[in-house]
Image (spheres, rainbow, N blue to C red):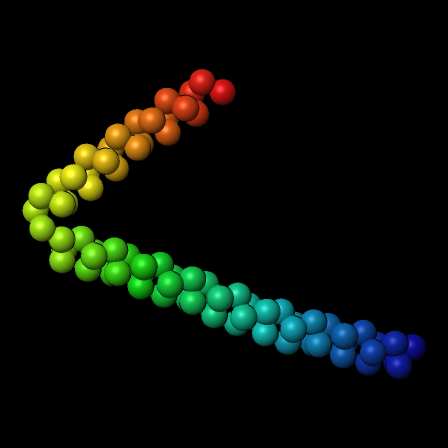
Length: 77
């Protein structure tokens, strides 16, 4: 009886340590994902900043046109 109690207690503690390690790994993965998104956003802003005013207008117009066509295409299905 005592042996079963000791074994069950050991299993419970091992599971809590594993879950703590899993939480830590999940948190690290989430931070990496956020870091990647920030880097991508920063790169996009830098790319837009180095363009001339005319190019930015053309890019904006094409982005809006593309969004309209994509929306229209998704409605027809």
